[in-house]
Image (cartoon, rainbow, N blue to C red; front, side, top):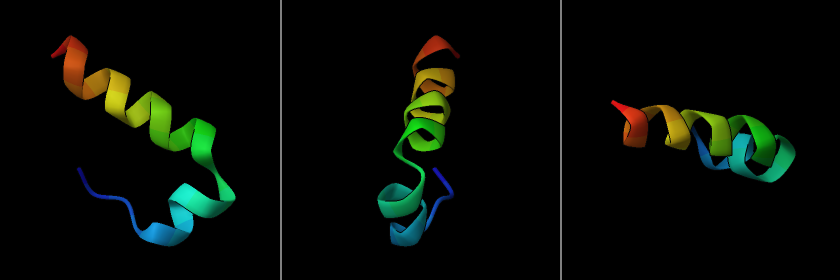
Amino acid sequence: MRFENQEVIYNPEKVLKEISKHFKN
């Protein structure tokens, strides 16, 4: 996973999508 803490704070939806991709793969 390659997102910074700022990504989590300012764009949680993006982070959730990234995590979902990892689980699907």
